[in-house]
Length: 386
Ligand SMILES: NC(=O)c1ccc[n+]([C@@H]2O[C@H](COP(=O)([O-])OP(=O)(O)OC[C@H]3O[C@@H](n4cnc5c(N)ncnc54)[C@H](O)[C@@H]3O)[C@@H](O)[C@H]2O)c1
Image 1 (cartoon, rainbow, N blue to C red):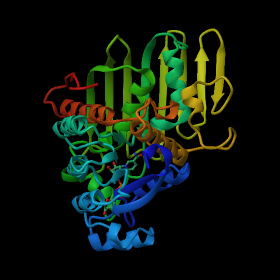
Image 2 (cartoon, rainbow, N blue to C red):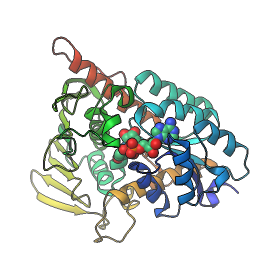
Image 3 (tube, rainbow, N blue to C red):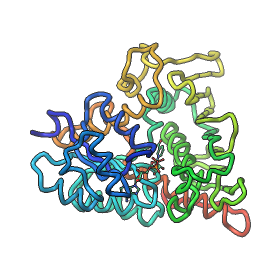
Image 4 (tube, rainbow, N blue to C red):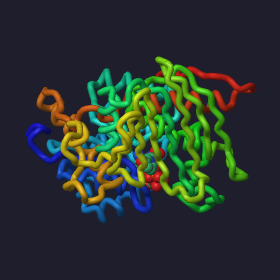
């Protein structure tokens, strides 16, 4: 049966007992009945991973010890997984994704794509060579009103973009967090990579800013530093952005901002108007024009763009949030996979989904920020890819 005609088979690496984001992937995959979970290597500890697989009602022979075993086991099956989601700490993304691509599997990978630009570029080349799809979980760009913002900018509704303000604030790392599984690897350069907050959440804000505006970065000027004593990786960063074409921006992120549980906000100001989107009210996009006052655009309303209306899982007025955005992301990946299997163009939800190219740009951004912040004297850095 071609991938186009059926529910797709999902496998997962990571996301086991007590893990954070794997559960969200599983919910998102099920939301629109696009995927069902058939296999996994869920844990760095194989025994715990098998126990978890049993709880997930995975057939015992499809509970694998690691990514290599998963490739070997699944490749031999007629009903092999169509795609494998990687929900492990950052430093493992590259070796696992490489194993999966070389084994002939499409991949959905968590961000940041890798912990070095060299690895990210190698994955991009490998995806090209093997003709496999790599989706990257830049979930915030799957919100309907983010697509609306992008469409409005592209249509010239705010004129020429002049200023971009992107921020992503957490509070959960404001105190020392010994004992937290999630915090332990995020604070460890060997597992997080060279970036702390900038790789964990700054990269989301960066993707959102460039996705909505369509702009690319010519140079950036960064400070990124650890605030809580004992940390070696940044838990906050401030980044000035100069875009090609003349627009300027400011991106700041921190994991130590009390009161900001998941404060992701994007504002874009053009010559004729401005757009404001805040994750805590994700169904709304505020559009202000110099001559027309302020309008609150709401998800699902008549007159919104096709890209926006294609996303969303419930009728307008029911509040949607993070899980639905993740479901949109997965619906987009499903559409890409089906379109590839049927050799056709994807429909609206499968267009503009984040791929390996976005993953490379994200890693290039993190490297440029870390290089700039570490430079002996303040300096502008040009990201290798933007
Ligand atoms: N897109 C988003 O919004 C978002 C949100 C949170 C986390 N993330 C990303 O998701 C990834 C995981 O983050 P988390 O907070 O869920 O981490 P976590 O520590 O909660 O979970 C990691 C899981 O991976 C497993 N694991 C580790 N190494 C493995 C290996 N080699 N093989 C198989 N399993 C392995 C662990 O046993 C655990 O189950 C990170 O890259 C993070 O940046 C993305």
